[in-house]
Length: 396
Picture 1: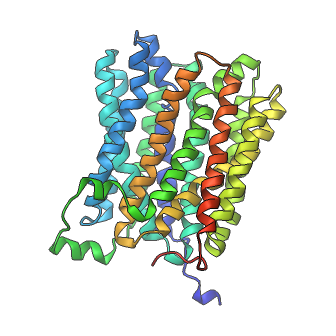
Picture 2: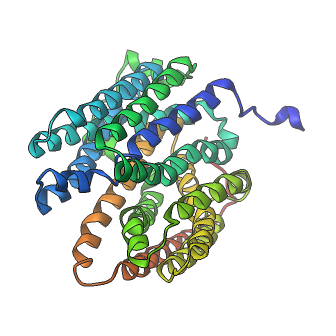
Picture 3: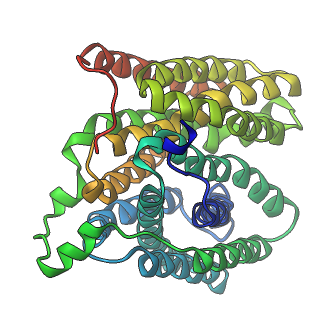
C-alpha cells in the first residue's frame, strides 16, 4: 500500500517551504509598522490609509499578468525574479522620508508581492502530488500562516524598541535567506507549459484574474481574511488598552497550534474534502475572537491564540487547496493568484472599513463584529456542502 502513496517530502519541497516562510516573515514584519512610521514622518490620515490600499491594489493588478505568464514560462526564473524584486523594494524604505515617494515604493512593492506569492504558490502545486494536494498545500500553507502570525509581533517589538531602519535591514536579511533557498530549489514545470510556448494562449485580463471554477472558495477566503484583519491591525492596540503585556503569547500559541494541527487537517482534507473541516475551523475562529474581545489576562490571550491557531491556521491552507482542487493543473497559477488576491483584498478592505468603525466603538467591539465574518464563512461552506452530489475527489 505504501508503494502506491506518492512521495511528498522531497528536498525541493522542503527548500520551497522554508524559502516561502522567510519571504512571508520578511514582508509581514513591516506590515503593522508602516502606518505608525508614516504618521511619525508627517503623513496624513489619508496617506496612512493609502499605505494599505495602494499595496493591495498593485498586488491584485499584477496577478492576472503573472497568472498568464505562468502558462508559458518555467517556474524557477519567475520565482527568482519575484524574490529579488521583493528584496530590492524592502531595502528602499529607509532611503527617504518623503511620504509620496514611500507610497510609490509601496505600490511597486505590491507588484513584487503579487508576483512572488503567485509564482511561489504555483511552484508548490507543481511539486505536490495531486493525490496529496490537501496535505502538501497544508504544509506549504504553514509557511504562510506562521509568517502572518509570528512576524508582525517580532516586527512590532523591533520597531518599538529599536529603529525603523534596523527593522528593515533584518527584513532584508530574511529576504536574502529566502533568495538563497529559492536558488537551491529544483522546480518542476508542467509539460503543458512547454506545449503552450509553441502556441501561447491569448491573454485576457479577466480570464487571468478569475478562475471561474474557483470563485466560490475565493469568496469564502475573502470573508475569512476580512475577519482576520481585525486581529492583525488592532490586537497590539487592544493589549495596550487592557494593560496586557503578553500580546506575543497570542501569536506564539496561534502559530504553535496551527503547526501541531496541520498534519491532521491536511490528511483529513485529502480524505473528506474541505467542507466539514472549514465549518469546524470557522466555528473555532468565531469562539476565539470572542475570547479575545473579552480578554483581561494573558491566560485569555493564550487560550484565544491556541483556538484561533487551530481554526484560522487550518482554514487558510484548506481554502487554498480547495481552490486548486476545483481547477486544472494548467490554470492552477491563476487559481493561486486569485487566492492571494482574496487575502490582500480581505485584509485591505478590513483595514479601511474597521478604521472607519473604530471612530465610534471600542477596540474589543471590532473583534466581536469581525467574528461574524467567520459565521458567514461557515454558512457559505455549508450551503456548498449541501449541493455536493458526488464523493470528494480533486480535479485531475
